View (cartoon, rainbow, N blue to C red):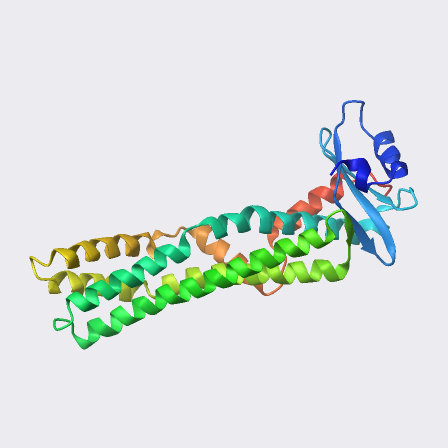
Length: 270
Protein backbone atom coordinates (compact mmCIF):
# COMPACT_ATOMS: atom_id res chain seq x y z
CA UNK A 1 0.00 0.00 0.00
CA UNK A 2 1.25 3.48 -0.89
CA UNK A 3 1.96 6.00 1.88
CA UNK A 4 -0.86 8.33 0.86
CA UNK A 5 -3.34 5.46 1.17
CA UNK A 6 -2.91 5.11 4.93
CA UNK A 7 -1.24 8.37 6.00
CA UNK A 8 -3.34 11.59 5.86
CA UNK A 9 -2.01 14.28 3.55
CA UNK A 10 -1.50 16.77 6.42
CA UNK A 11 0.80 14.23 8.14
CA UNK A 12 2.76 13.63 4.93
CA UNK A 13 3.26 17.38 4.55
CA UNK A 14 4.78 17.58 8.04
CA UNK A 15 7.05 14.63 7.23
CA UNK A 16 8.23 16.30 4.00
CA UNK A 17 8.80 19.66 5.71
CA UNK A 18 11.16 18.07 8.24
CA UNK A 19 13.47 16.31 5.80
CA UNK A 20 17.17 17.05 6.30
CA UNK A 21 17.41 17.82 2.57
CA UNK A 22 15.42 17.34 -0.62
CA UNK A 23 16.80 13.87 -1.28
CA UNK A 24 16.13 12.59 2.27
CA UNK A 25 14.01 9.50 1.64
CA UNK A 26 11.46 8.54 4.27
CA UNK A 27 8.91 5.93 5.28
CA UNK A 28 6.06 5.83 7.76
CA UNK A 29 5.35 2.82 9.94
CA UNK A 30 2.23 1.11 8.53
CA UNK A 31 0.71 1.02 12.01
CA UNK A 32 -0.90 4.03 13.68
CA UNK A 33 0.18 4.05 17.33
CA UNK A 34 -2.52 4.56 19.93
CA UNK A 35 -1.46 5.95 23.30
CA UNK A 36 -3.71 7.54 25.93
CA UNK A 37 -6.57 7.96 23.42
CA UNK A 38 -4.34 9.79 20.94
CA UNK A 39 -3.01 8.52 17.63
CA UNK A 40 0.55 8.99 16.38
CA UNK A 41 2.46 8.42 13.13
CA UNK A 42 6.05 7.18 13.31
CA UNK A 43 8.30 8.34 10.46
CA UNK A 44 11.86 7.30 9.65
CA UNK A 45 14.10 9.39 7.39
CA UNK A 46 16.11 6.65 5.75
CA UNK A 47 18.85 8.82 4.23
CA UNK A 48 19.64 10.91 7.30
CA UNK A 49 18.65 8.10 9.71
CA UNK A 50 16.41 10.28 11.87
CA UNK A 51 12.96 9.73 13.36
CA UNK A 52 9.90 11.92 13.77
CA UNK A 53 6.67 11.20 15.64
CA UNK A 54 3.64 13.25 14.57
CA UNK A 55 0.32 13.42 16.41
CA UNK A 56 -2.85 12.83 14.39
CA UNK A 57 -3.67 16.58 14.57
CA UNK A 58 -0.48 17.32 12.61
CA UNK A 59 1.43 18.64 15.63
CA UNK A 60 4.95 17.55 16.57
CA UNK A 61 4.82 16.66 20.28
CA UNK A 62 7.70 16.75 22.73
CA UNK A 63 10.01 13.80 23.29
CA UNK A 64 8.59 13.40 26.81
CA UNK A 65 5.08 12.87 25.41
CA UNK A 66 6.12 10.37 22.77
CA UNK A 67 8.61 8.16 24.65
CA UNK A 68 5.94 5.45 25.15
CA UNK A 69 5.00 5.81 21.47
CA UNK A 70 8.62 5.19 20.43
CA UNK A 71 8.72 2.03 22.56
CA UNK A 72 5.49 0.76 21.00
CA UNK A 73 6.60 1.57 17.45
CA UNK A 74 10.00 -0.08 17.91
CA UNK A 75 8.25 -3.10 19.44
CA UNK A 76 5.88 -3.49 16.47
CA UNK A 77 8.88 -3.34 14.10
CA UNK A 78 10.61 -5.99 16.21
CA UNK A 79 7.56 -8.27 16.28
CA UNK A 80 7.16 -7.98 12.53
CA UNK A 81 10.76 -9.10 12.04
CA UNK A 82 10.34 -11.86 14.64
CA UNK A 83 7.39 -13.45 12.87
CA UNK A 84 7.98 -12.66 9.20
CA UNK A 85 11.77 -13.04 9.00
CA UNK A 86 13.07 -15.12 11.90
CA UNK A 87 9.79 -16.99 12.31
CA UNK A 88 9.70 -17.91 8.63
CA UNK A 89 13.23 -19.27 8.91
CA UNK A 90 12.21 -21.44 11.87
CA UNK A 91 9.13 -22.74 10.07
CA UNK A 92 10.95 -23.47 6.80
CA UNK A 93 13.57 -25.59 8.55
CA UNK A 94 12.91 -29.31 8.08
CA UNK A 95 12.82 -29.90 11.83
CA UNK A 96 9.75 -32.15 12.00
CA UNK A 97 10.83 -34.21 9.01
CA UNK A 98 14.38 -34.64 10.34
CA UNK A 99 13.27 -35.76 13.79
CA UNK A 100 10.62 -38.09 12.41
CA UNK A 101 13.44 -39.60 10.39
CA UNK A 102 15.42 -40.07 13.61
CA UNK A 103 12.45 -41.92 15.10
CA UNK A 104 12.22 -44.22 12.07
CA UNK A 105 15.95 -44.97 12.28
CA UNK A 106 15.57 -45.85 15.95
CA UNK A 107 12.64 -48.12 15.07
CA UNK A 108 14.75 -49.82 12.40
CA UNK A 109 17.59 -50.44 14.84
CA UNK A 110 15.27 -51.67 17.58
CA UNK A 111 13.62 -54.13 15.20
CA UNK A 112 16.90 -55.29 13.65
CA UNK A 113 18.65 -55.76 17.01
CA UNK A 114 15.61 -56.87 18.96
CA UNK A 115 17.23 -59.88 20.70
CA UNK A 116 20.65 -58.26 21.06
CA UNK A 117 19.62 -55.09 22.91
CA UNK A 118 20.23 -54.86 26.63
CA UNK A 119 17.73 -53.18 28.95
CA UNK A 120 20.07 -50.20 29.20
CA UNK A 121 20.23 -49.89 25.41
CA UNK A 122 16.43 -50.10 25.16
CA UNK A 123 16.07 -47.38 27.76
CA UNK A 124 18.58 -45.17 25.95
CA UNK A 125 16.90 -45.84 22.63
CA UNK A 126 13.48 -44.92 24.05
CA UNK A 127 14.90 -41.73 25.57
CA UNK A 128 16.38 -40.74 22.22
CA UNK A 129 13.00 -41.40 20.61
CA UNK A 130 11.30 -39.25 23.24
CA UNK A 131 13.87 -36.48 22.70
CA UNK A 132 12.95 -36.45 19.01
CA UNK A 133 9.25 -36.33 19.88
CA UNK A 134 9.81 -33.44 22.28
CA UNK A 135 11.56 -31.44 19.54
CA UNK A 136 8.70 -32.25 17.14
CA UNK A 137 6.04 -31.17 19.65
CA UNK A 138 7.76 -27.86 20.36
CA UNK A 139 8.22 -27.28 16.60
CA UNK A 140 4.51 -27.74 15.97
CA UNK A 141 3.73 -25.27 18.75
CA UNK A 142 6.32 -22.87 17.31
CA UNK A 143 4.72 -23.00 13.87
CA UNK A 144 1.30 -22.32 15.42
CA UNK A 145 2.65 -19.31 17.32
CA UNK A 146 4.38 -17.85 14.25
CA UNK A 147 1.11 -18.09 12.31
CA UNK A 148 -0.74 -16.46 15.22
CA UNK A 149 1.85 -13.69 15.38
CA UNK A 150 1.46 -12.95 11.68
CA UNK A 151 -2.30 -12.70 12.13
CA UNK A 152 -1.73 -10.25 14.97
CA UNK A 153 0.48 -8.07 12.76
CA UNK A 154 -1.96 -8.19 9.84
CA UNK A 155 -4.80 -7.17 12.16
CA UNK A 156 -3.16 -3.79 12.81
CA UNK A 157 -1.31 -3.22 9.53
CA UNK A 158 -2.48 0.11 8.05
CA UNK A 159 -4.71 0.43 11.12
CA UNK A 160 -4.41 1.34 14.79
CA UNK A 161 -2.10 -0.61 17.10
CA UNK A 162 -2.89 -0.40 20.82
CA UNK A 163 -1.04 -1.34 24.00
CA UNK A 164 -3.20 -4.49 24.09
CA UNK A 165 -1.94 -5.44 20.63
CA UNK A 166 1.63 -4.89 21.77
CA UNK A 167 1.13 -7.03 24.88
CA UNK A 168 -0.41 -9.86 22.87
CA UNK A 169 2.37 -9.83 20.27
CA UNK A 170 4.99 -9.68 23.01
CA UNK A 171 3.44 -12.73 24.63
CA UNK A 172 3.47 -14.63 21.33
CA UNK A 173 7.10 -13.70 20.69
CA UNK A 174 8.17 -14.86 24.15
CA UNK A 175 6.24 -18.12 23.73
CA UNK A 176 7.99 -18.65 20.37
CA UNK A 177 11.37 -18.14 22.02
CA UNK A 178 10.40 -20.66 24.69
CA UNK A 179 9.71 -23.25 21.97
CA UNK A 180 13.17 -22.79 20.48
CA UNK A 181 14.80 -22.72 23.92
CA UNK A 182 13.12 -26.00 24.93
CA UNK A 183 14.17 -27.64 21.67
CA UNK A 184 17.77 -26.64 22.33
CA UNK A 185 17.68 -27.57 25.99
CA UNK A 186 16.40 -31.10 25.45
CA UNK A 187 19.25 -31.72 22.97
CA UNK A 188 21.82 -30.47 25.47
CA UNK A 189 20.31 -32.43 28.35
CA UNK A 190 20.35 -35.73 26.48
CA UNK A 191 23.71 -35.46 24.71
CA UNK A 192 25.66 -37.79 27.00
CA UNK A 193 23.01 -40.52 26.88
CA UNK A 194 22.73 -40.26 23.11
CA UNK A 195 26.50 -40.51 22.88
CA UNK A 196 26.44 -43.60 25.10
CA UNK A 197 23.74 -45.20 22.94
CA UNK A 198 25.68 -44.60 19.72
CA UNK A 199 28.82 -46.09 21.26
CA UNK A 200 27.05 -49.18 22.58
CA UNK A 201 25.04 -49.83 19.40
CA UNK A 202 28.23 -49.90 17.36
CA UNK A 203 29.33 -52.96 19.34
CA UNK A 204 25.96 -54.71 19.01
CA UNK A 205 25.30 -54.67 15.27
CA UNK A 206 26.18 -57.92 13.43
CA UNK A 207 28.83 -57.49 10.76
CA UNK A 208 26.55 -58.42 7.83
CA UNK A 209 23.40 -56.61 9.01
CA UNK A 210 23.61 -54.03 6.23
CA UNK A 211 20.28 -52.35 6.94
CA UNK A 212 21.17 -51.86 10.59
CA UNK A 213 24.57 -50.44 9.70
CA UNK A 214 23.02 -47.91 7.30
CA UNK A 215 20.51 -46.90 9.96
CA UNK A 216 23.27 -46.64 12.56
CA UNK A 217 25.52 -44.36 10.53
CA UNK A 218 22.64 -42.10 9.53
CA UNK A 219 21.51 -41.93 13.17
CA UNK A 220 25.06 -41.09 14.23
CA UNK A 221 25.11 -38.25 11.68
CA UNK A 222 21.89 -36.80 13.09
CA UNK A 223 23.25 -37.14 16.63
CA UNK A 224 26.41 -35.23 15.70
CA UNK A 225 24.34 -32.41 14.19
CA UNK A 226 22.38 -31.97 17.39
CA UNK A 227 23.50 -29.58 20.11
CA UNK A 228 26.00 -30.41 22.82
CA UNK A 229 27.80 -28.17 25.29
CA UNK A 230 31.25 -28.92 23.86
CA UNK A 231 30.31 -27.29 20.53
CA UNK A 232 29.09 -24.07 22.15
CA UNK A 233 31.25 -21.02 22.78
CA UNK A 234 30.69 -18.45 25.53
CA UNK A 235 28.76 -16.14 23.23
CA UNK A 236 26.25 -18.86 22.43
CA UNK A 237 25.90 -19.78 26.09
CA UNK A 238 25.37 -16.12 26.99
CA UNK A 239 22.76 -15.84 24.24
CA UNK A 240 20.85 -18.72 25.82
CA UNK A 241 20.80 -16.85 29.13
CA UNK A 242 19.54 -13.71 27.40
CA UNK A 243 16.77 -15.72 25.74
CA UNK A 244 15.73 -17.17 29.12
CA UNK A 245 15.42 -13.65 30.54
CA UNK A 246 13.49 -12.51 27.47
CA UNK A 247 11.08 -15.42 27.94
CA UNK A 248 10.53 -14.20 31.51
CA UNK A 249 9.60 -10.76 30.19
CA UNK A 250 12.87 -8.83 30.40
CA UNK A 251 13.96 -6.67 27.48
CA UNK A 252 17.19 -7.94 25.92
CA UNK A 253 20.32 -5.69 25.80
CA UNK A 254 20.13 -5.34 22.01
CA UNK A 255 16.57 -3.95 22.22
CA UNK A 256 17.64 -1.50 24.91
CA UNK A 257 20.48 -0.31 22.69
CA UNK A 258 18.17 0.09 19.68
CA UNK A 259 15.74 2.17 21.75
CA UNK A 260 18.61 4.33 23.00
CA UNK A 261 19.77 4.97 19.42
CA UNK A 262 16.25 5.77 18.21
CA UNK A 263 15.68 8.27 21.02
CA UNK A 264 19.00 9.94 20.21
CA UNK A 265 17.96 10.23 16.55
CA UNK A 266 14.43 11.52 17.16
CA UNK A 267 14.03 15.14 16.03
CA UNK A 268 10.95 15.89 18.15
CA UNK A 269 11.61 18.82 20.53
CA UNK A 270 13.33 17.95 23.79
